[in-house]
Image 1 (cartoon, rainbow, N blue to C red):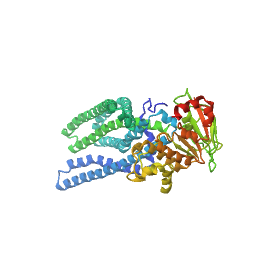
Image 2 (spheres, rainbow, N blue to C red; image 1 turned 120 degrees about the vertical axis):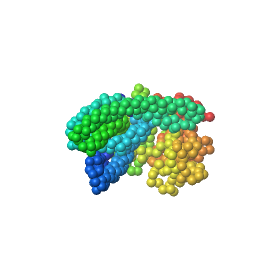
Image 3 (cartoon, rainbow, N blue to C red; image 1 turned 90 degrees about the vertical axis):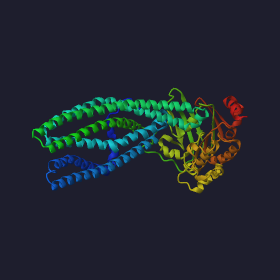
Image 4 (cartoon, helix red, strand yellow; image 1 turned 45 degrees about the horizontal axis):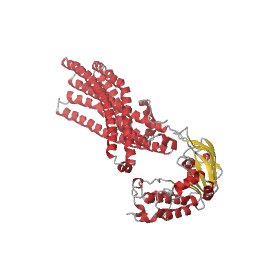
Length: 585
């Protein structure tokens, strides 16, 4: 699927997918049910206490004391039970949403690169945050209100019949009238709720994208333009929400008017019974309270139904993500890599098309053998397929045809995690996390000691500038390494690769962001890092090309030439042209 947002409407039944998360906390769930039963019983006992206060409380002082004590005890029980119900169900909502977010985040991390090529990160973050937040209100509030209201409605109706059967029969006429607008408006509200959530997701995606590229925005002085775009997205979200809120308010108003209109008519009939001596004032008061409790609960059910419609849309969106299966998966019985890994690589007649570009082969009949410990440089014009070689070797995608082997084993037979453990990558644009320098380097090997970490930084020529930071290696580097220059970020990434100490090394323009002085220092570090390792290098700079054992020239996803620098220059052709344009000043 190219767009994660569904075109169909999610029914309220989609909320059933929440049950496994609720069931995982059955202790809290049972405690909530017990508190709910106690609070509902206390609520339904209030009219009885009120009736005793009216019919018996004014006959003597003792009866007054007894009636008011009973009323206070019921109110106290209601307060304690309600507090317990709120505590248990709110905590349950927090735990359920935390579990749901954890499962969704874990699932997203396990999806393949093709999924992230198709879907926007802002949209995915919106589902992880905004949609999950809707479900928090369902579990932590709406579910409790719905069940409490349902129990109260049933209990109130039963007690209305006990108090006055004929008045209760009149009252029930209003219930179908109250439910009718809810049913009729549900489908429209569901569609409008989904549209509202999508507009919020669009605004979140725009903000995520813009804030992630804030330097580019500021460099082009496009702050007013981006403010206008975000304001327009917010205005559209508010306009969509206004329609939903208006429809929701109308459904609620109509339901309440109808139910309380019916109650008013019933009260008129009851007043006639009191005047005629067919009912006591206390009994009428009791009936009125039950009618008000029942009517208020029906109104609450109307509001809860609207909330459930919105939450169903959010759960539908989350469920769609959880149902996504990765295309790149570990085999049922993965083959173990021999230890130590020698680092022999082989691409056998590999053909590959990116899912987003099915008509254009990124690699076509690509065959390459790399000996253990050999350094091979991949050169060629943009779009030649050099980065695709790295992508397939890391098994972010599987080839359409052909195979890739590491130490004679097809990488599709390996656990992707174990395969990637054997490979260290230094990308052209390194990822620096909003964490300390030490944590960023230790990302290469989480169990590394402080001494190993410092040695890696020294080998990458990164220790000097890291020590100069206010807190040294413990200094926070800021989002995307904002506190470091481009060359410094590159050296942190190289230190990470040094620390990983993997037998296969992938260098994607690893010195491209460095000045001449830094490049010489880092080139020396890279030479030490490359020693004894199988290394694939994507590079344009002459210094990196010259020290390679072999240079492979690519164009259009194919190998067009290979050999040493001198041999390729003597042959002329594409390499000679690239060398003149890119390698030679």
